[in-house]
Image 1 (tube, chains in turn orange, purple):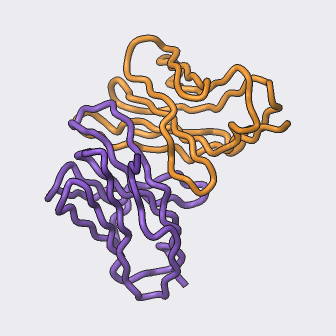
Image 2 (cartoon, each protein chain N blue to C red; image 1 turned 120 degrees about the vertical axis):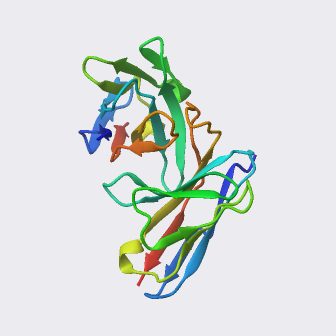
Length: 114
Length: 115
């Protein structure tokens, strides 16, 4: 079965420090991977995606993600965290070929402290 | 730019009541989705639609119904509300082809409590 896992419920980081939010996946074939962010009382907003090509993908708000096929991971990163980055982050994987449905991870809450 | 609009934002229902959650999008997206979000559980797909007149079940369809009479609108119906349906409901849309890498666009959700 295809799945995505976010092993950390919460990540705490000081402002200005680098941050990493982890995601691992299990799919058949080549994955389409996505990161979304959710601010309080709002819907999910698209951050970035990996489809093919360069393993380092750049997205909105200075975020980037690294695709690692051997480790089946797609970790979200940012070189210097901001307090305003505090939010809930979701990793998602497209289910399989011939469908646009996504499976979402359970989410990781990022808390950036001043 | 309205995007995906959901109404109402909040609602409290009594057990056994029915209601319709409204969703409309103005991006001319052919695919639309309904999810529910429960704490610590991520998002679960309830129903989806690949175009007007076509709907299909997702992971957790029991207790819900949908229709898609136009490209823009995708309402979600709860016929007999149960406490287990207390959740936050999100509607989303995307340009889909069945093999698309386009992201989904989300509304701001409807917070529903069943008492």
